[in-house]
Figure (spheres, helix red, strand yellow):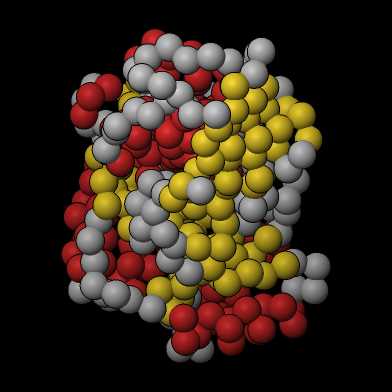
Length: 319
Ligand code: 2P0
């Protein structure tokens, strides 16, 4: 197959409403649970690849350690077909490593760009399966709006697909408490969480929550979507706090204050539910109609926190 001189792909990040937090197989990145996510329009990674002498990586014009992507490219070389060293040039519109899942859009965009560079004819599901080897959450960043990553039981069966729903005015208010690099990587956080005595119960509960979430989404019931997502996220963070090996938390004092505020907003009649990932930032699940009022109300109270509104986003695209 002939290669292109260069190829560019754009992938949007995603926020899990039902989380991936644990690996059944750390080498293949097979998860212990299936997860479900919302793709976000406002946060994305654009990645260009071109032939070079060695694999290298530039993010937002700054050279990066390419070890993780080099290992990932070698997996693609082995699993699909060999190709020359690549210079990877990425523009990241996601705060890196602060719980806004930059690895999701990064590995999705890279997988798609490499496939285009090599003229590989692959389905979105094939791309999702390959991207999993770079980062689990990347499986879900190929699809518009909602995606489900079925945990599967081996390399062939673990990938994400689009989850079809009626149109719904769902929105997130993203509270950017900290853009600092996180202390515990997701991979290490999951390893520790899996030592919690509550882990097996969380896995079981997560399967029930996924079924309920699918039903709530099919009915476009945003309040129920929020309720289930908040319960699932708090369950995930409980695992970190109760880990037997090096318990920890991604929360800080402001995370707790915002969580209280989300409860108060709910008592005041708003649709407002919290979800948190591998960092202190809180994402508030609400409706498009209410997002601005929630953002304004929080901005008055928390002067140092930046608030963004995020909305459902598109699937993978090429330039
Ligand atoms: C998720 N997160 O479902 C969960 C919830 C963060 C919290 O997937 O080890 O960077 O590279 O597969 O995908 C972040 O973990 O982890 C993540 P690896 P990844 O979105």
